[in-house]
Length: 322
Image 1 (cartoon, rainbow, N blue to C red):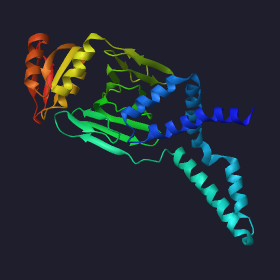
Image 2 (image 1 turned 180 degrees about the vertical axis):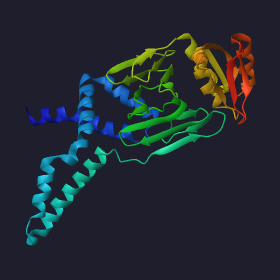
Image 3 (image 1 turned 90 degrees about the vertical axis):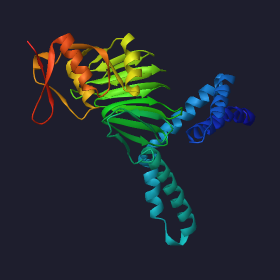
Image 4 (image 1 turned 90 degrees about the horizontal axis):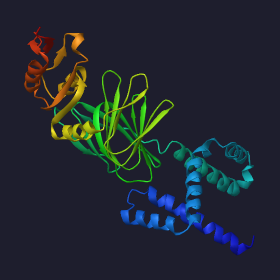
């Protein structure tokens, strides 16, 4: 290979490396992202170079544990005092390499940011990466935003995410389930019985539970059961229910009464309690105003012969009337 040929081969990789760094920047614009896509489309070699540069970027995370770097650092520490200038230079270079490698390995070790909604109505928050999160009542979300990754953990409740574009992947952890964003708007809910529900409005998401994996298309939803099994949900009801709760309405379609009660309780100060276990799995359908327990009770009494009885602590016990 000639010297000029070598230079030609390295140019795409150098440009790809520059793109890796630029796309990680918080001030990277949509125009620059379009320019990057145009550059990829110019030549298949650009795509190959991008893949190589991205892999190198990811593998650099292991630099801190590299045995050669550790050995070099140890040898530098034993260099005689009279050769202090080269020693200091070498040590500085090694420390810099180890330091950068460690920061990449820990992804900057970002501190978690907690977003909580203690009110009885949905709230909208802008996350540190520019994503828009709509937190349902009683929801707690933890976020870590590093240089390479964006990680969220839904600790309780329900959230809708309009994910900001970025070269950094975004994952949402909810119990034992992991949801990977592929540029989208989606919702995740953790229920008290261990179930996790995922509903997709736009784009695509990949849901992983154990060895099982499922990719959703717009208008689809699924459940991850407490045992880890992924169970697809109905498509037609998803959009209506998903679009309703951020607007203060709850839409149920053959939803177990236990889930109906759990969701309604997020919005009101008077809790509903299922006193009869036999009615917990009763399928309930209808649209209700969030927090309007009386509207729900009227529907339950009329359609399912279930009434509420006030307890001494103010809670309403639900029982069959016959």
